[in-house]
Length: 251
Image (cartoon, rainbow, N blue to C red; front, top):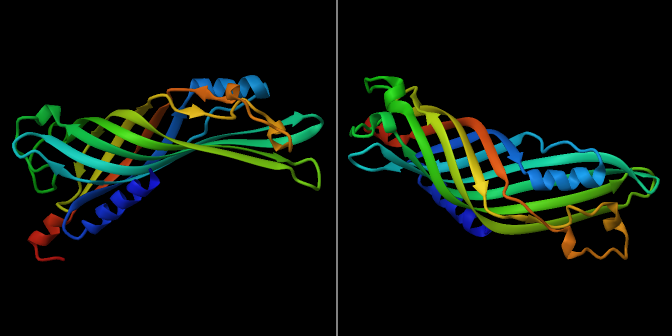
């Protein structure tokens, strides 16, 4: 799954000299009740998944006569929970890390300006910024999700450590809203709020504790926890229109 996403990324970059593309970045929040409950029940004290980062690159094209625009995007997201607790007389640091590599076919519907044939929003276009810039986003997608559970014994000079990793592909759906603000014919900034719903990824070993570091440890199927996590994103998109530069002879 990572290889196709890498190929898509290279294709995006290859289009930059004459295309219209965007860079997306912001905060990533993971909401996964089943996974969090599994950790809290085992540890007896746990934080929620922390706020972390989201990065993406997209390519832009649109319908000719309606304000429906498409932004196929490859992205990377991560989040984690960290705990410290006592197990059999030793202090342990535990980290449960979530990472996803995604492809979404973002579709923006400009509902307030839907029937117009406007090559918006560019700085030189007249009109109300809300009318021509507000959109609702819908997107199907696929994600490659990596789960990593690691334990480190911090009690002794000899550190016992275990790292268990699992990866899988899942289907997801995305929804969100945003507002395109044309700063110039070349640059558009877009505040975005969106959420991904992932269908049924599983996290093996999340119910197991530091006994995973023991040589005779044998993980069981009961350590696997299924969830339908929701990933929330708050951030900005910087859109670059090189076709506008080319109109003025810049290359």
